[in-house]
Amino acid sequence: MLRLMTLCLSVALTAALPARADDTVTTYQLDNGMDVVVIEDHRAPAVVHMVWYRAGSADEEAGTSGVAHFLEHLLFKGTETMEPGELSATVAANGGTDNAFTSYDYTAYFQRVAADRLELMMRMESDRMVNLQLDEADILTEREVIIEERNQRTENSPGALFNEQRNAALYLNHRYGVPIIGWRHEMETLDLDDALAYYKRFYAPNNAILVVAGDVDPEEVRALAEQYYGVIPPNPELEPRQRTQEPRHLSERRMVFRDARVAQPYVSRSYLVPERDPGDQETAAALTLLAELLGGNGTTAAMAEKLQFEQQLAVYTAAFYNGLALDDTTFGLVIVPVPGVTLQEAEDAMDRAVQEFLAEGVDPDDLARLKMQLRASLIYERDNVGRLANRYGRALASGLTVADVQDWPDILERVTEDDILAAARLLDRDRSVTGWVMGEEVTQ
Image (tube, rainbow, N blue to C red; front, side, top):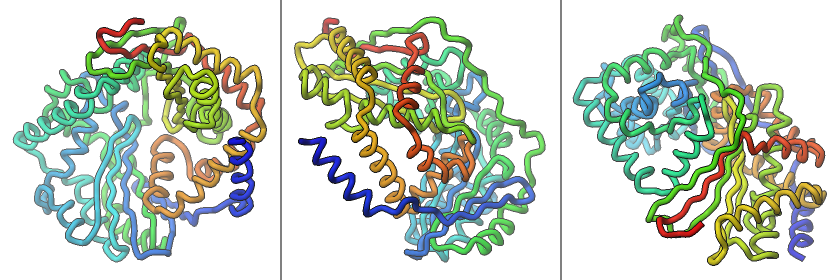
């Protein structure tokens, strides 16, 4: 009955959705190599201004883990013309918001303001691209800030600590195995030279993407971009991104993680799988749908139906895949067993559920419903210019193109049952880590 009701709702919603909602996107490149993406949305007099650098924690030199995130914090210090904190204070005084974030493959800075404040944002953001002023006091203060951030987000969270250890076990040679925030013992030694070396190497217009979304005119944005960013010289020594790659994986890895703070034991498995590549997103699309069909929806996905409702062996199940990465990424499975079910029993049940799903094949109604939901989410996302800017910025900073972003909904729509089952064969236990997370006294 639940599936029938869901399918009926899906049909109704599908009829109400356009076949495809195209974004109004203009792209160009400045003479210094900076890429510019303008996304028009004239429904509100607001604009999101973002600068994405094609450099994240995976681009750090060995021994300086955390420096990409450290520099993100330091960029809110002063320049020759701005006092420390002045940029954020100016944004707030103009009724806007600003922030920044660091990932494995990129670092991004953004402001959301009234459309007539765009020039002010460009002036300040372009200033700190090249004119950052730092001293030893800034280093000492902000280093304590990022260490405390690690204390709060990682050291105080058994799940975060486990994820850190699991990633280190999954990636034998790639920098994705190093936490974005950094290993604590290396964070404690980060200094001014480390920060400036990363800044001078990667913070250049020919390594940056400017994304402007909202109530703007592309030609006016071009003029402002040329005025403020176009005058910044490129870094001629910037080389193509060279990452250490993974060797052949010959054996699965297993780990038991114990922490007295774990209240609910669980099993987690991560596989190494392909990412979305420019002009070649079909495998990633199939993996996206596989993850959703297995465990993307907490009530109607295959693992939930079998393990939570039919067999009542689990209180929670999930599957996840994030294809936006420059290099091989992960596909994950999680099961949290009900009390009285051991982690070994939970793991065996999870494996059986996946095998049964593959043996039974993909229910065409489920696949149609899921495709509709994904298409709807991409269309509704257009109502938020911040999310729209993020969609393009994350993709381009991860090696994709504007065409790849715009083709993605159609590629998802073309995925077949055979494609999904073929993608499932990529889940190779020799390229995986299985972890049992438990309290110190929990039996296996």
